[in-house]
Image (cartoon, rainbow over all chains, first blue to last red):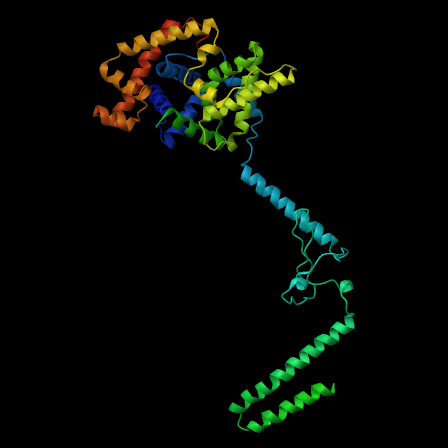
Length: 204
Length: 196
């Protein structure tokens, strides 16, 4: 069998969808280089149509070369729409978050309810910035309430946290002394220290 | 394996940017798409332009083709829209819409007679006669293999089982049968410029 016959047989098998990938690639390469094979492919298609339908379509048109020329000049095969959507979404998020960063120092969110207002006792964290994830909807800050929006003065807030810390210290101190006394060679010392600590904190 | 499997194979390669695969699809369908476009547009030059445009659009939209319908049906829609848009751009009113049912009937060859010129129809009749004669003149083993493939749509594996021979032999017989018919076709209508 000559190379030409092998090409022609592969072309026939390609018509029937019976080529494996390797042979398909080889055949596509051969067809692209050989005008006779292209013409043969076209004729085989017409004969096949004729056999199947006993009719043949109007054959007096050949745009294949001009189509290939145009596509080789500007292939521009469109991207997968899923990737396009993903890229668009990423850009949108980047724009929204970038804009939020730029505006965070000056943006007032006075009319927007805070998550800590909604419930759950969110503890303010120093340095945290409000984050908005919205596409035209209202912004929802999720971390700290802006200082200027607080109903309490900053010094009152500081005093409140100080009180909370002392209360917690008083509650834990006796439990700590009790636990320490169990393992200490002089257990009374633990009990002596605990009231002292409590008194020291109260005297401040 | 069927002709649409072939299309799918070529489409998948074209989707990965293989222009050679798309070239074979253009060669396969340009006659039918040209006939479809000529249903909307009378001028031969415009038919050629719109047919070309339809294939270029199809290639550029190929990543959106998911194989839910036959490739030809999808291509048919693109070509019909290209023809209608062309008419609108020219300030002419598009005629009746081409439907998917049209595409399927067209794919079966059912609408070809409506779209072809008398010359093309005469040539088609002539070609059909030559093909039929050539088929009947084939040795029995070749005719059986080709008939099972083209008319019954069996895969090579199925044909091998029916004929009781290896798949490689089926492939070779179908190839030789096509070669014999092609030889007759070329001899009979080599002077006809419309059939390349």
